[in-house]
Image (tube, rainbow, N blue to C red):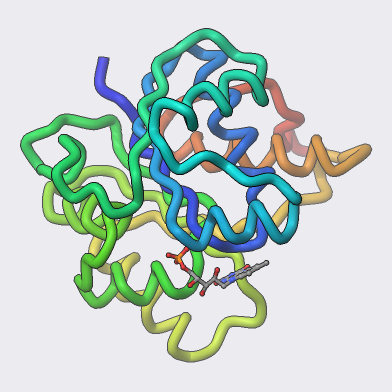
Amino acid sequence: MAPYVIAVTGASAQPIAERAIQLLLRKDSEIELILSKGAYEVWNKEIGITIPVDPKKQEVFWRNRLKESKGRLCCHRWNDHSAAIASGSFKTKGMAIVPCTMGTIGRVSAGFSLDLIERCADVHLKESRKLVVAPRETPWSIIHLRNLTNLAESGATIFPLIPAWYTKPTGLEELIDFLVVRLFDAFDEDLSQINRWEGC
Ligand SMILES: Cc1cc2nc3c(=O)[nH]c(=O)nc-3n(C[C@H](O)[C@H](O)[C@H](O)COP(=O)(O)O)c2cc1C
């Protein structure tokens, strides 16, 4: 079974990434996980948690936090360019960058692969594999829009983290689940039950 590459960058939507990891593991999926340097900072500033950088310690951290023993989780350092996922010869189901900063979007759009996330995104585009980019920023400048257009034209799916109200959410958790499930619809993966629009 090929894994998903899940990349989490330093944008203000870490609970969405966390829920995606949890639901994927619950479905017994395989995950190759990369947190950018910025993601650690946002976790610290917004959630007050220091995530271990060491890959083995980080796997234990997620397993304990998410209370999920199923699936396979392989964590990577953001600067580990020798990881298997850095090569196009390593097969994956695709990659999701969730949430994705405008910095990462700019670098991937320019083919400027500084860290492992940018390299993996570059690989997914060159191999014509599914790449879903979930930006979290508002408003968008013309530079953001041009970079996103460039990524869309290169084959990426742009999935802005914008919730819907037609599901009649009763709280934040339902809004988050809606976004996570709709994001993985792009991979034809049904992660959880949500209220889908069925007409009037
Ligand atoms: C608390 C906090 C929240 C941030 N939220 C966002 C955001 O929502 N979107 C964004 O593009 N950048 C955001 N940033 C800025 C990025 O984290 C910063 O540009 C970082 O260098 C991005 O690096 P990365 O793309 O490698 O994660 C935030 C920074 C902090 C400290």
